[in-house]
Length: 430
Figure: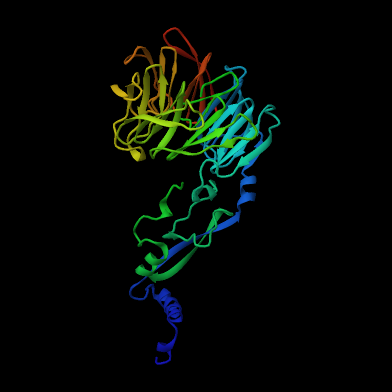
């Protein structure tokens, strides 16, 4: 026993750990923790392999939609973009799948598709949709965060802590995890990983236009917006500005910082309207390269897309879950005095997402409660024209000839009637 007492502490723990493991006990004051360390690959190779063109495939999680010429582009959240030939809206055809990992938004001008991928801006020549070429990537043009180096198909392990001490996020991407058990005191654990066992850790984290003929059209949930020769891409707390007068070589302009929680972007004339978790924010782009703050309409915490028509802004607020505690509803805001937006009326909703306007018709995607169609000719007073109840709805694009809507892996198309709309096709993307 005298010799044993002189052994180094670490050897003592190993011996004790082995003996204690046999009887299911740990030394007094010590706990067993599961630590996950990342398995990595070269970041350049990782991003190159994140892009590929393939035959049509089933969608996993439908996201935002974008219309350009006779094509519809449907985002598969964080996986890429499905391309549909919509020459015949009564029978749209799946054409291709653009694998683009880390993607959530696209915008198109003059056959150049701009998309986000792991915080980079990707530019593709889609003049021949069956032979997409000239793919370029602007590194960290939209954002640079740790999370953009984690593959979206990587399954997160159950662990007490994640050890990133040897990770260089500027050169490496995470493609998997290795877990091991470590015996240490609670204080040692806290000192090494920055928090005490039982407190918040990454273990349970989900991770991180004016529409001219040469420009496509997105829905109200879009984070990208092309206005003239500029592309505006919003992220959590800023507007990223790109001069795309040279379509193949966008120039990165100064980033404009905003309030936090920005989710969507819409434009009317020389104004940008940003939808955020705290409110609607208005920016002047009469000088396109440098958006300037004008005013805001503040509400309680909620998910918030916005569209604008004339002197009114239409804002859907979705409460509950991570979106916040505000009751869900459609807010109509008077913006006739742009420096002082004024709330006029609130219409209750169940779980609204996107919305759109075509002439005097207002379309609201109310999640599991379906699509609601309103007559807004007497705004702020609305009268409901129809309610399609047995569908799940996410976002809409009111086109000149038909209405596009996405929801739960299904693309719907409607034709406009005098006082209503009529379904002309539905395509299951799964």
